[in-house]
Structures are given as C-alpha cells and as structure tokens.
Length: 532
Image (cartoon, rainbow, N blue to C red; front, side, top):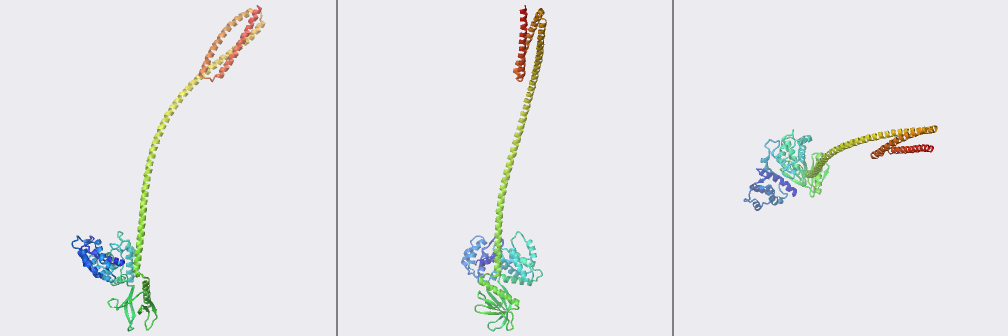
C-alpha cells in the first residue's frame, strides 16, 4: 500500500502544482474540492461530502497549502484506495490538469500521447522527494531503453557529452524538461516519428503496464481445436491474448501462478515451434513464428512463473528498486563522507586554531625573547661600559702603582748607590787599615832598627796620637753616618739585610783591628816608659 500511495502522490503533486497558478504553494479551496471529487471518482473511493465540506469550509481564510491538503488526502482518499482502479485513467486525469500549463510550446518530434506516456514513465522513475526530478542515471536508463526499442545502438559518448553540459546547479530534470529532451530528437536522430512513438509505447508497456513480452503467435482452440493467430501480452501473473495488437478485442486470459509450467512440444499436425502452458485447470498449445521466438516465450514465461514462486516484483520494478537503494546507499555514503569531511574540516579548523594559538604563543615568546635579548644587550652594554670604566680605573691605578714602583726603584737605586759609596768607603778604610798594618809593621821594623831614636819615636808617637784622634773622629763620623744609613735601611726595605750584616762584620773586623791597633800602640809606650 505504501508503494501505491507514493505512486499516486506523484500524479496528485503534478495536479496540485498546476492549480497553484501564482507559485505560492497554495491552491484555492474550490479547486481542491473539484480535485478531490475527481480523485475519488477515478480511484473508485466512496465520496464523503460531509468530510469534504467540513475540511474546506467557506468561512476558512485563504487558500490551502500542500501540507494543509495532505491530512484530508491521506485520511479520506489514499487510505481508502484499493488496487481496483484504472491507473491509466488516474494518470490521464492528473495529466490533463497540468499539461496545458507546463508543456513546452516548441514543436516536438513526438505526439501529445507520447508526451503523456513519458510523463507517466517519469513518475515511475523519479525520486521519492519533491519537487519531483529524474536523476541522470534514470535518464540514461530511459534513453537506453528507448534506443534499444528503436533498434539502434546506444551512444554512450553522446550521453556523456550531454551530462558534461548538464546544469550542475540541478540534481536532475523535471518532467517537462524530460519530455522536451525526448521530444527534440537529440537521442533519436535518423528515426521517423512512428519509430520513436513505437519505442515510447514499448517502454511504456514494459515499465508502466508491466508487459514483460508481447507478440503474435498461433493458439489452438479448446472447443473447435482450430489454430488462430492472436496477439499475446505477458504480464507478471497473466497472459492475455487479443485479436490484434490494438488491444481492442480481448479473447481471453491465461492466469499464471506458481503451479503453472511451460514445456516445449515437438512439431505435429503441420505446426512447428510448439510449446505447452500447463495451468491448474487448463493447458494451452501455442505455436511461435520461429524457434527463436519460441525459446524467448518459453524463457519469459518460465521466468515469470519463477518470480511468482519467489514472490518477487517484475524485473523492471526490482531493477528500479535496486537502483534507488544503490543511490540511497551512495547518497548515505556521500553524506557520511561529507560528514566525515566536515568533521575533518572542523578538526582541521580546530587544528588551525590550535596552530594559530601556538603561532601567537610563539610570536609572544619571540617578542618576549626579543625584549629579553634587548634587555640582555642593554645589560651587556652597561656591563661593558662598567667594565671599561673599571678597566680605565685599573689602568690608572696600575699607572700610579708603576709610578710608585718607579719612584721606589729610584729610591732603591739611590739607596744602592749610597751602599756602593759606603762599600767604597769601607774599601778605602780597609786600605787604610792595610796601610796602618803595613805602617805598624814598618813601625815595628823601625822600632827594632831605631831603638835609639826614642825621641823621634816620641815625636812620632805624638803625631800618631794626633792622627789617632783624627782617625777616631773619622770613625765616629763614619759610625754616625752608618747609623743614619741603618735607620734609612730599616724604614725603606729590609732587602739589604745581608749587606748590612756584611757591613757589621766589616765593622767588627775594623773594631778588632782598632783594638789590635790600640793594643799594639799601648805596648810601645809601655816599652818606652820602662826604658826611661
């Protein structure tokens, strides 16, 4: 029931849209009353005038939208529909309401009847969403079926070029665009109008009327047993046969179910290409025109019975359902892919934001580092300036120290010069002492040789005492200078300790010499006194 409802809604949608003259999405109540009445008539649904008048009261304000009409349509019409109405009559009623307003004014290569069949086929192949469109895959399927029905090869490259020029802003074609596409002869070049019309009719019979196979064959009668040519039409659960292919004079039906079977028969009674259809209460002997047709019919009937056993829909409906499910699957996969892409995009944006935050942090860190580097350089400059100042002060102190060292060196040099002078004086004193010793030796020699010259010796003694006094004075003077030098040496530096010690040693030796000298001089006086 759901599939039938969806099928009916497509035709009703076309009619409702055609009644919406100003494209506002709403239709006047009077028009909807007429539409509802016509629908009840063609769908063989009992009329409910009370519900109709109650739903479309004249005191209501304004027209009714599609959504406002749907509750009444579902409750009082579609839910009561049984599968006992003429679908062609229903489609023709909806077609009549919308064709004049929407069919192109451009001349078409097909008749209005062919356009109607294309319109019905569109409703069969279109997507179950509104506004109704037929997607490129179904357009290709329809055009391929038409091309095969016309007996020409399918031009895939031509269709690919058509798809390339297809408007990317649209997901598919409307029914009127599809009618114009088929009617302008773009995919039927070289074909006459009749061939195109026959191809449309064949595809219409297969897709809409569920005609699985049709054609002339010869049937054996049940009563008179005569053989008569009939036009056979195979549908999912019945084989109907007519006087001719115009289907005006129907002669009978062969009801098919899962218990029926089809068998090939040998030629007999001058009839060839025979096969037998066995049903519950009857059997039918049929003769095909040739072996190929015979095999095609046997295979078609056998496949139909097999589908009845499986409870499966006709092949074209099953194929349409599979294509829709595949598109839904692909759409779901595409939506999932888009969702994943959005998630990736969001994650990427988040990552970009994180990277931007990291970049800002890096910039802030770089700024802080630059500031710290500036401060470091400033500190370094200050330290260098301070170091330079310290270095200059150190140089100045060093220079002063060098000057002090130079001064001390000069003073030391003077001191050393004084020491050298003292040493020279000391040497001179030593020479004097040596002279004195030599003189004493000479005096001893003279005393021995000139013992008689006492007076001269006395005189000399006096002179010697005088000289001794002078020498004593000189020694005292030398001692004073020595003491002064010693004081200077102690104050300035003790580095000359060794020299002073030598001087002291010399002084000691000199004293000893003086003492020896005094001793030596004292003895001669005593000697002179004794002699006196």
